[in-house]
Length: 361
Image (cartoon, rainbow, N blue to C red; front, side, top):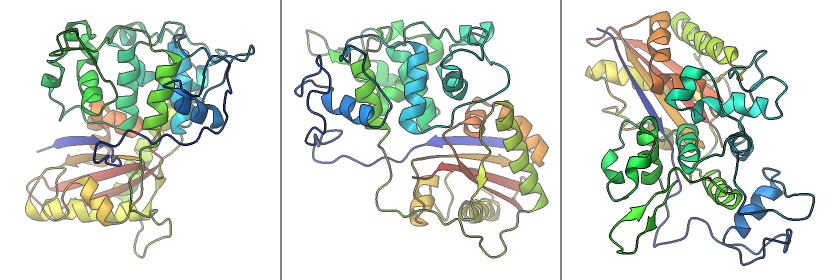
């Protein structure tokens, strides 16, 4: 029997006692832009992202906070804000984004996270089209690794305009609402809200969103060790799977996943625990959820993902994972930099395979 299961998750700093998403520090560059006074609602976010070279103003000294953002511009913002590696394939993935396009590298890195079903069929990205609120939400949900499988669409019931969400993005938008990526505006009666998924994203909105989300991390943990642990040589099956995953990443010009000995140790422990208890789940009887296991092991990361398979060889596992959207997204996520592979025999499936993906903080 062969089974696969994927988990996409992110650990965030929990906000308590009604604290704002981020505290407002003393402005570092007062009146950097003539049209963005210190009391503008997005001043802090813009100031931060400009300081990090994620955003720039215009030659006339303005920022134009109300100007709309194109899909190509948002792809660049997303890559720079999250420190993602730019894509560099020899040929373009999208028919309307040639290698010579100014945003080619950024679109290659995150373009697949901004696709709709119709775009996939046409092989186009539409770089000059405005980036809508739902486009930004879907891209961020995918890059940040928020789970779609565990998101109930019922969270959208309070929005009067939920029917205007592009059907292929409904689950992404629902996940964005759950994780406060998108927030609705109350209507006049105060009992319902408007999400406005089709409205263009403005530069101020993009800055506020990315400044907040790109700073999420896990408190109270330390960096995972990169030292070679005793007996940490990969088995042939583990090595084969890692090489197959990196071959798929290379096809898109993505950096290879680096082997993290600590993650290998954890992946092996979890796969053995599942095999010993004959359980097929992301929640381990001994170690709990992937989040709990990493935290207990003092692994520091920005976001993480996990793929799980049972009863298959490395080649079969890779084929099944690449045919499954959630698993494929984990393997090809440019945000992930390190991985640990663990394969253990036993249980009713014969073998249990675990791959843990992370981006270390």
